Amino acid sequence: MSRLARPTNGRMIGGVCAALARRFGTSTTTMRVIFLVSCLLPGPQFLLYIALWIVLPSEDKVRNKAQTAW
Figure 1 (cartoon, helix red, strand yellow):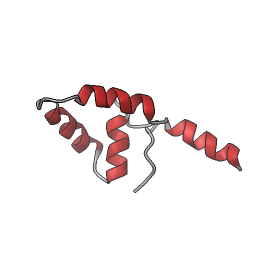
Figure 2 (cartoon, rainbow, N blue to C red; figure 1 turned 45 degrees about the vertical axis):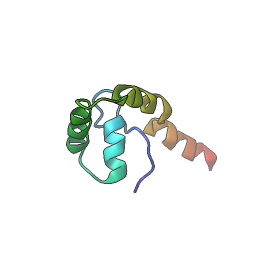
Figure 3 (tube, rainbow, N blue to C red; figure 1 turned 90 degrees about the vertical axis):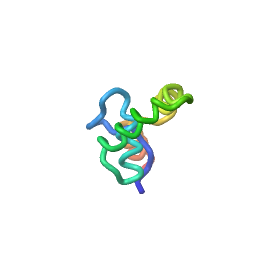
Figure 4 (tube, one colour; figure 1 turned 135 degrees about the vertical axis):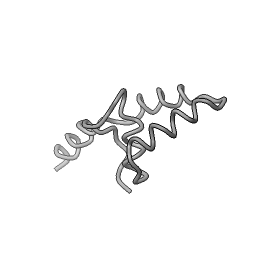
């Protein structure tokens, strides 16, 4: 499993579904369908998506931070 970061390529809105798909080894389309189906159920799915969008770092920031560390 890879580190959880929003990718720069392949994002639709915030890249949260693409990051989760990469982390769990599924396709981005599958993760987006799972998210859309979960929105039909009661719960805080949209709030969770927005929170992950804010909390997860962008892949660019993670890559730049790793390069400056060395």
